[in-house]
Image (cartoon, rainbow, N blue to C red; front, side, top):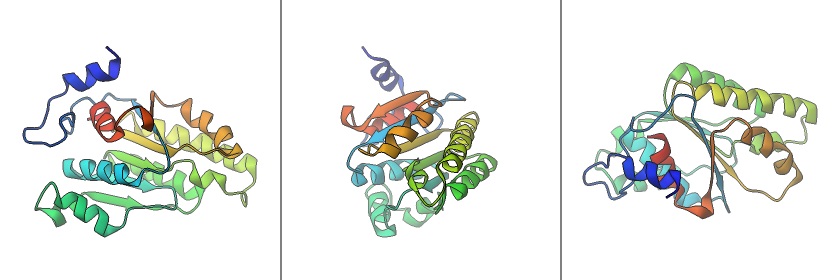
Length: 200
């Protein structure tokens, strides 16, 4: 039996939850544990469900690094399927949207002062900006990777990265992969359940 299956079976299930492997908010988190999920084809429905599951558990910090972000109605409807306390639940979401890799780094450093779980969507997107010189992007990426690893020492952190057939992706992905503790492939399993299980 693989380690993930063992972890998922050992988790405490929330009574009445339609997702059998969703663990209690503080269930399994280990200081220093950083999870990276490689997504395929920008799986928006699964990401919306993931955001919903996190927001149902309490306040968390969502950093949207890419161009796509679920709209308010999509998240609202998804939350509605689980609870009637929609507005109260949606207030758990602290959303930040950087437009440069420098802003991403600043937000990661700021998130460290929030002391709340952190979910980063499309972590590498802003480092593909050819308007910024490559050595600068490489330096800021290294700093951002260290910042997200530092975050994981005190709170649950997950980073999502769509797999892309580009030179920039092939260059930057190993830098991020070097600081994480586990990499999940979206094709291997339902990442919503996996991320919940591994972090909470």
